Image 1: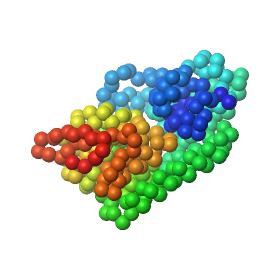
Image 2: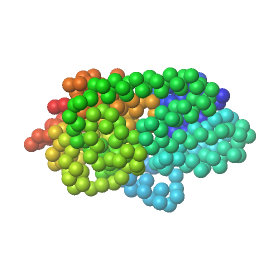
Image 3: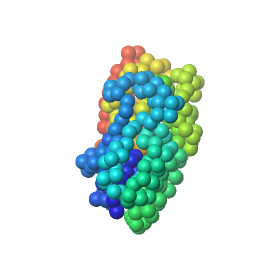
Image 4: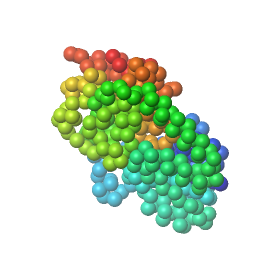
Length: 313
């Protein structure tokens, strides 16, 4: 089977199911696993490089309101690849090429590829996507195994944090303007032993004011700017350090959203374990392999400390 993945979390899932050799093309944002970076890329970002968070938000709003895509698809390259299966999504217009554009193009291709759209809103639905892709590619048994592995890790986290006091948590998906993380993130916070004071499980991420975040009285703030790695999230947090520390939280952490929270793929379980470490480091002393937490400590003059092992000042 010749598979084209037009969304990063689908690429991660395909490799996790052992389908890497059958993936013939990916997007320009597919950077995990490392082998995906060597594959043919059939999309590109139309936004200029180097925009600030506020400028990115403004540009995305303008293009989506005008019905313009954020990404462009290389239709000629896709036709030459003769795919049997194309995996995309319609959940978020900022995250991938237009689903309707993909469907329209697929109807024109001589290979007549099947198009699957993965659009999870909840953590449970992300596991449903594992079943969908596994069935569509003839890898049902591996899909069952992967779901079992994820479920076992979820159970370990739940057992580790049960009967612990639940800290009040604000998960911020963007900082300029402020967006509260929705979809699966509130569920991850609950499973990790916290109380999400702003996000709604299964609902879209929403813009709020800094005053609304402060009114929610979070004890822990997790800065997880959508699509950013930990160092970039840390820089964003530093730019808004005065606002963040004014919230009165015990501490503010910046995490790799791109790897563990923005993409509803197999690494969400790493995100859950990372959250459990952040919220209950005494119960979950280790971070997932390769995960990094960066802390903006609350102080009279803001100081910064990076850590790969501990999230608490």
